[in-house]
Length: 403
Image (spheres, rainbow, N blue to C red):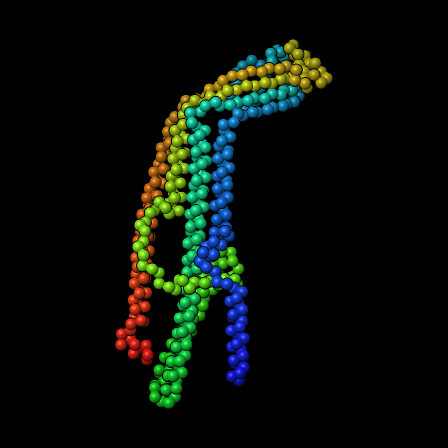
């Protein structure tokens, strides 16, 4: 029987060794690197940067001249009337003399033309729009860094949680072994009527509680491994960590002072402020005249004569009357000033709100830093105290541990 047990133990050890060989321990740096490479939210932020880059190119196209081309063929009546029509988009325009009749006969008509329009100067409006697009890209880049920072922190937290959970399993297993020994000892003394039976019941309850703690610790390990798999994209069966350095006491070093502006969260908020400031500069350049240099060339054809008669056949399908011209157009939104000022006030309020949010973020980051420093110093003192007690135990503690 003992030989069979020995063989089974040897086989188990060999299997565990084989699994350990095929599952090398992952370091904290490897887990963070895989997270930054595989987690979907980081790819979302990267595509947002690409979209913002395309927005910059779109804003720069405003410097290019605009060319509109037209070709048209129609079959329509030729009646015309004196009078004015206010600007609208329902009634089509008609040219030519008034023929003095209402004839519903139709003729062919054709038109072809091209219009070139270019804005030589704009008082900085187009450059302001390019700056808006550039600030949007800078904000997307800051968002990517903030996302990478948060994902790296989450992955590191899951890694540390797994390392702590594995140590909890070791401690819980030691507690189960201790409870088993106490139960066997108490049961032997109780059977020999040297201890009351209540001590056996209490020992059984303590063993049950220690086994429950072991199961909970094992559950925490699996949950932590699942969390690491979620962030890093590594298959759950391949997750095994190597965290021996985490079991060592960190050196007592002076911490660098807190710099909130270096935090990716604050950097993203600073980029948001710059974006709102660029939008405000664009609004400040909106109430200026717009100057356009224009050139047009076109030709028209008609199957109608000046007296209202029709030429018939295919007359009018070919553009036979040509025109061209060049000019300079100025537009100015005279009554847009109140609306533009209202938008400026709203944008300025938005910028002040974003600035106040940055101040709030800096305050929160300093508070989190101070709490983290206090927790680190307290944990380090506890570890130092526990290590000193185990190295230099008091006589009472030594007797207690031997018992």
